[in-house]
Length: 231
Image (tube, rainbow, N blue to C red; front, side, top):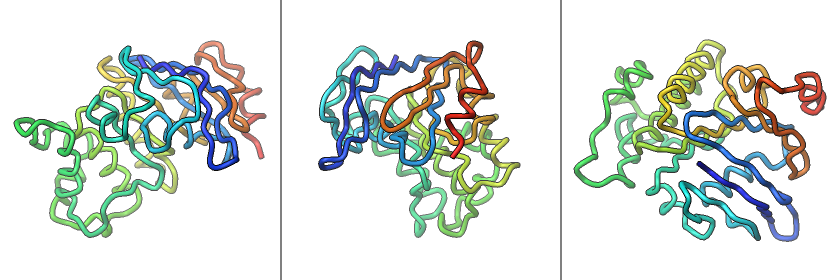
């Protein structure tokens, strides 16, 4: 389980997160929704170690990780698919995938066949440069790269952004397949309510650095959430 307790995060004097408390469990997808600028990405940066927190606690599998560097958290099975994908444009698809080897013991540094079962297009493009791929293909590559790390916590920041509908469906299918195995906790930041509702067992809505809704899918008040997401 991922346990976040009373986390505050600042950028200089600006408060990005205000006393955030949230759990994410194995075999579940926790979806975090909210308008632009409410702190969703900041929360993921706190979890992955990309930005230090001011106060509070972040525990993963029972261990306090809030002081660990981002690469130490990656070694503990936390993989991040950032907003904008951040693939290496001049490296080939194969080389991009192999960057996930960095946190693995040498004996495990082999591209798993599962990556190409989940994203068949990547197998046909192993020699192409990452920058030559379409946005949807780059998103599949970014998720594939994270899966090479054999994560137990997969953190995704707006994986549908700028992606064509057919690939959005493919990504949703992959997320649901991974969740269904029960071997991974998934935390997904998203702006599209329907995509999040269909995938998430728990849905959280943020506003101005606070959590204003935290509900299971069964108990969710959809009208209230849609109102909070409207501009």
